[in-house]
Image (cartoon, rainbow, N blue to C red; front, side, top):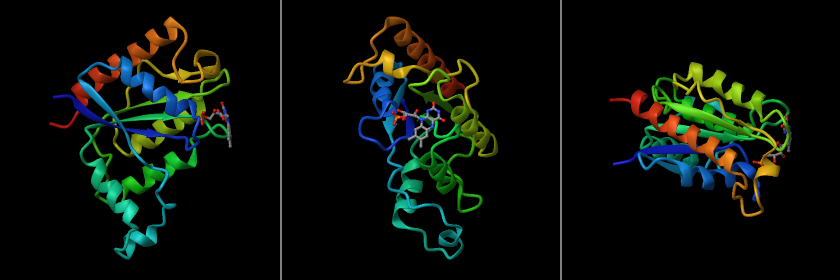
Length: 186
Ligand SMILES: Cc1cc2nc3c(=O)[nH]c(=O)nc-3n(C[C@H](O)[C@H](O)[C@H](O)COP(=O)(O)O)c2cc1C
């Protein structure tokens, strides 16, 4: 049976490169992992009062419950102002609480950043990694995945146009499948 991976995408826009990239990643990923997009755009901004008062929004409760079924996480994200987009940070925070009940704890992950610019979202990628250290998500070290100049490599339907980028994405997913297999909770 394949290992279920929850995919969190750091963009809400319709024509997002990050969203489109997931389609390709699903195509090139080994059959041992099953990538499933997780809705995070509906989560209200994190407010600790909700948890302290024992009355979290239904979206938090649903998200936290749903995330338990995943054995690993993949973050696909653009960079906003050299940092991670708020939608990703919010999901990380919501999932990390109530204290002691984090959904992330001990489950392996990987980060793929995307940009039409040359730097490939390096800043966002490493900011997410910084949070993953504290959240105890063993994040795949190599290959690093900064996908720059994405607009040049993708056609309008979101297909990757050149073979070398496709091969690179395939190698990332193969390494990730291996990483998840080795690091998943017993
Ligand atoms: C608020 C905002 C800030 C941005 N900051 C950066 C940035 O720091 N680095 C970068 O490479 N691109 C930046 N961009 C451009 C995004 O990479 C570009 O809009 C990209 O297409 C967004 O990803 P998406 O296609 O998945 O929505 C920014 C875009 C927005 C809207």
